[in-house]
Amino acid sequence: GSYDYIYSRKSKPPGPKVEDFHKEPDKGNTGFYYIASSKKPAGWQHFFDAGLQRCNARPGVDDQESFWDTLVQIRKGKISDAAALQCFRHCGDKLVCKGIEDSKVFNYCDMSPWEYAEGSLAHASKETRLVAYHANWVFGKR
Image (cartoon, rainbow, N blue to C red; front, top):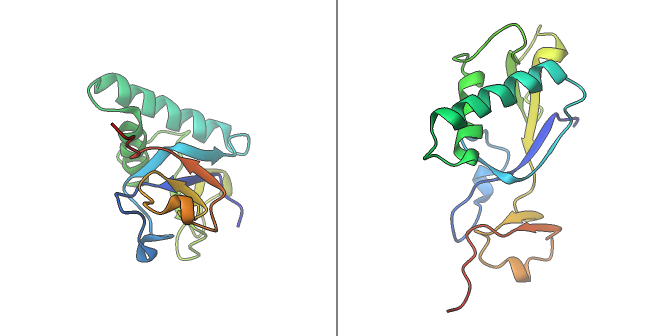
């Protein structure tokens, strides 16, 4: 599919679960993602402005939490204005966003957590599908 945003899943050790792959999350991992922001610049600007406001309002909360909290608030219609994205389509779900102008639809999907792993994948060094690794949840030897 064609997506505006692809992200790595946020998992906990020992790693991702098959049943969560392509399931719409309330939280993701912002350490590794791709954005096609030139397609919908006004929507993205609104999204990042709202995210920065949320970060500034909650200095004790990390930016990743604030980013995903903002995404969920916009998705639920709790943060909106004329520039806001109006509908969220996760992993090409054809049942949502019917009749909404494409410039107002946020198309997003998770990357394979076994190819684009984050640190919760306990056996990452043995994972034959691994393409990239984001080393959160990783602990060194003492």
